Every structure is written in C-alpha cells, then in structure tokens.
Image: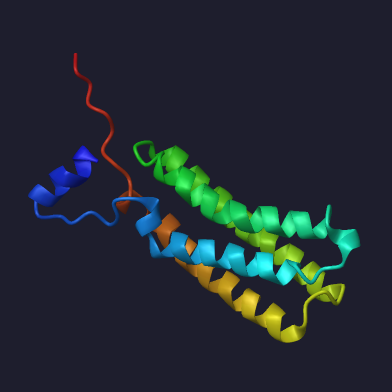
Length: 143
C-alpha cells in the first residue's frame, strides 16, 4: 500500500488499489455467478461431476487473479497465477462446451458464455502481456 501512495506522489496513479478494483476481476466474478445460474438447470445426476467441475473452474478464474494480486512483488509468481487463471478459463470453456454437447445448455446460452470467455481471455491476455505494469518493486535490502 505504501508503494501505491509513493507512486501517487511521483505523479503516477496506481492501476488499482486492490484486485477488487480491476475490471477483469469484476467481470470474472459476474461470470462465475452467471455460470452458477446456468448450472442450476443441469440434471441432478451431474451434480458431483459436470456441475461441480464447471462451477469450480469458473470460480477459480477470479480466485487466481485475487491470489496473483498478493504476489505482485514477485514477478514470476504473479505471472504464474495469472496463467493459472487463464488455464481455469480454458477449462471452464471446455466444461461449458461439454454441457452444450450433452444438451444441458441451449445454443444461445452457449454462445453468450463463449463470447464472455473470449472477452475475459482477451482481458487476461492483455494483463499477462503487461504484467510488469502491475508488479511492485522488489523489497529493499535493509542491511
């Protein structure tokens, strides 16, 4: 937090004070809620398989962004968690395509979530490509 205030003094505005300020995180959170609503219509026999899988992976997208935020001081860890988030996004799309293939989702719903997945992927890709803009300076050696 001190680093963010310091950057403001130097004329640079921080990109965000918290992961909750990131538009990407906000959209990921809404997306996980949308996925949850869609899975309410899945058959009961899918409760512990497909339903559980797609809910977990969709929730992990934003969770990994939140975790990445706390690791911004360490570039490699930050980048690793962002790529984990991208992996969860791809897994979610796989499960949603599976649900469509099994006729648990109609074409319109599938196209809507696929479009949102593509947009989240674009936003996440931009963050990954520009990850250094989000990183904090390394800790000072106070010897």
